[in-house]
Image 1 (cartoon, rainbow over the protein chains, first blue to last red):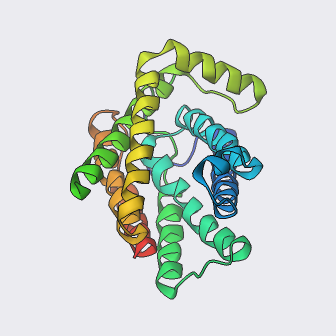
Image 2 (cartoon, one colour):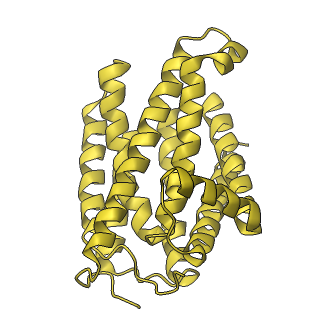
Amino acid sequence: MNVSESSPNPRPHHLIRTYAVVALFIALKAVGNLSLAWGMKHSTHYLEALLDPAVALGVALLILSVLTRMALLSMADLSFVLPVTAIGYVLAAFLGKTFLHETVTPQRWAGTVLIVIGAALVGSTSESTTGDRA
Amino acid sequence: MKWLLVVLMVTATVASDVLQSFEMKRSGEQSVGARGMVRLLRLIAQRRFLILAIGCLAVSFFSFMALVQTEALSFVVPASAASYVFETILARFMLKERVGPRRIAGTLIVLAGVALIGG
């Protein structure tokens, strides 16, 4: 089944499932990166950091995020997944500001707004336009 | 050296994503539960392009790490976003995805946003 990028979605359940996996991937990656950054910032030596529970948790979550993204690529186009998952940059900015007390400049907030707009635009297209999925 | 690492990082990212997408489209829809994850790991072990994709992902990760050690994050993050452009082009011509005006416009807006985040 080949559909154009703007066709009404013929499989609404598939769309909901795809967005659930997008949300899971973004959450795993954001929390994984946060945990990794948290552990790295609290360790004085590189080797010590590798044994830090927060770093270990971060690495485990990031490995899970890679597997989740592979599952996502089995459901949706690469050209859909790339911009839509960039929403993770926005979540990273919020988490960094909230938990790591990082400074988020107005320019960075402007960037996050653009990412949301761009991702919404791509999100309004059909998530899968190739018919060769088994 | 800086630009060599950027080229290596972007090339490895693009290769990894295109290979993953190609193989995952062929494999059928995968789930993300515990069984799905085990099935995915088995799939990775069976498909050579997926193993190659994981290798490319590792090259991309270590190039990124090497770059952030010497260059500002404000340079590395937007530079890494160059992969969006190449991947969208390859998705259109190699993976035969329908990339229309709305998807191109959205991707370019996201690209501008990522560049601003890094700046």
